[in-house]
Amino acid sequence: MKKVLVIGASGQIGTELIVGLRSRFGNESIIASDLQDQPKEALKNGPYEKLDIMDDQALRAIVKKHEVSEIYLLAALLSATAEKNPDFAWKLNMEGLFHVLNLAKEGIIKKIFWPSSIAVFGPTTPSDQTPQFTIMEPTTVYGISKLAGERWCEYYAKQFNVDVRSIRYPGLISYTSLPGGGTTDYAVDIFYSANRNEAYNCFLSADTALPMMYMEDAINATISLMEAPAESVKIRSSYNLGGISFTPAEIFNEIKKHRPAFEITYAPDFRQKIADSWPSSIDDSRAKTDWGWTASYDLEKMVKIMLDNVLAN
Ligand code: NAD
Ligand code: AKB
Image (tube, rainbow, N blue to C red; front, side, top):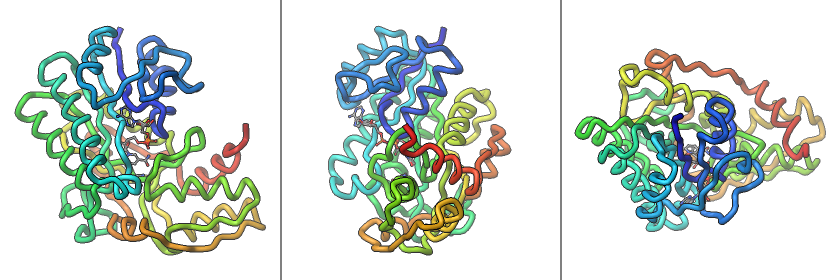
């Protein structure tokens, strides 16, 4: 039985990744871990360990205890939070990755998933249909840490034959768990205002187009990449993943079709500068050809599901 450890499992992605992995591979095969002493409700149907990824010895003890063969490393500070605490963001985002890469280099684990982000791109990158290989000059601490992480992943793959796989996620949209401090969080927050019958005050300007994706597509992509034969995973830095590109005005108009009284105002803050440095859409043709990626959700379908589920329980 394969044993998988998910680090940072209580966050926006982890909460749904655990569900996806446990439904495919069995509850007992998937060990959730995070900083909290106890698992959140959604993680209680399988093993849970308290783990701070900065503690290499604690990580090694858990890997040994459960005979872990694969790790999904999700713990990180996201773009907006990282700008407020750059030193710590760099430390957490890089050291955590080295702890996991070194376990694979030593042959203790067999496979790693580590997420990158559209934040690896910067203002000098072609913004429309950003290619897989292009200019990368990120201007945020988060983007710099993700780009450095990508280079290290590829280095470990080439030099030490480490099986590490990665996706440059766009902004992810989900209703199970709130996002953890990113620039794309507005595209989740807006649904909470809509379903509370409140106006939404958006921290990005009306015409800021960014690449986004509904969480189910992201989880399917992640598990597909991890289950793909090693020889089809030709890119060992990180794969572009596209999804849906839209502006705050466009998502607002789609929500308004279902909630005609909904209103929006715009008050761009420090996150506008971050958003302006990121692509507006992504070319993910390599993910399609190498391991068969296809998206299932467009803006219309995603908005309907979010409105039906946000604050529903
Ligand atoms: P999140 O902030 O919602 O969750 C991160 C989790 O990591 C939290 O539960 C937190 O408690 C945990 N964590 C923090 N420090 C830790 C530590 N020292 N040890 C163990 N756990 C720790 O983030 P997310 O949105 O789930 O993102 C997960 C990963 O995906 C991150 O690497 C992020 O950069 C990347 N990503 C996310 C998005 C997105 O839109 N959500 C987009 C691109 C990339
Ligand atoms: C963020 O906004 O920081 C994240 C991301 C795109 O990496 N959602």
